[in-house]
Length: 276
Image 1 (cartoon, rainbow, N blue to C red):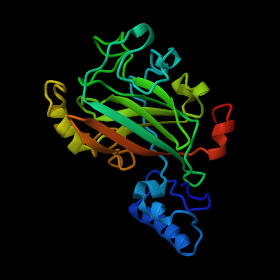
Image 2: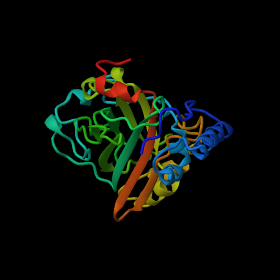
Image 3: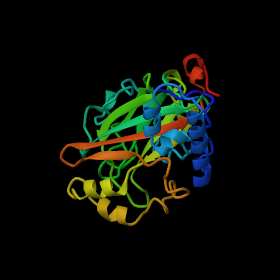
């Protein structure tokens, strides 16, 4: 159930723990006064990050976006809108990226409309393969466009992608890139993105996945050389708002989920005809 618009919202990306707790205390006070209607038990069960409804940090798209801002553009290719991104598509053929299965779910919520789910937004995600290479850019796979795809958020504000667990290459924490657009019509160039960010994967899960040395060559050694705190993207806050909840096993695959706060009014999504 969506919380009402008058609830206090934590909008500062780098808010301190004290500021976050203050927002939660204000919410609790309102609850006790009877201003929260509906399922209080469900609201109380939400995790701290969800309750705080924090704006997702803005991050670089990196050197391999495939969105037309640095070379090739997968967004203009027929077939880019898909949920299973493990294989190449269109003129690039149907070759698949090997790796442990991973389902990625992002839940988009409005930081300016009381944490309501944002339906109708387009999300483009991309990441490296098990060997650390990016399709369309890296040696040997410039002709491939796998591990890239677009989905439109549903009534719960969610998009889900079936992919593989990305490898770890030197100097970067294991991550997944994503861009958010106000509509599918705008998702044709990274220049139109309303927000660009990255998802971080938990260390314990990464270590387990990378123990499959033949499938993820070099990833264990590369992971040992970087931390969330010294990574050049997540290092400013340790990835606290970007670390996905992840569960599963090497045998069955994994599922990662992340709440993504976006400064877009809930009503703007249905009627937006351009980028602001």
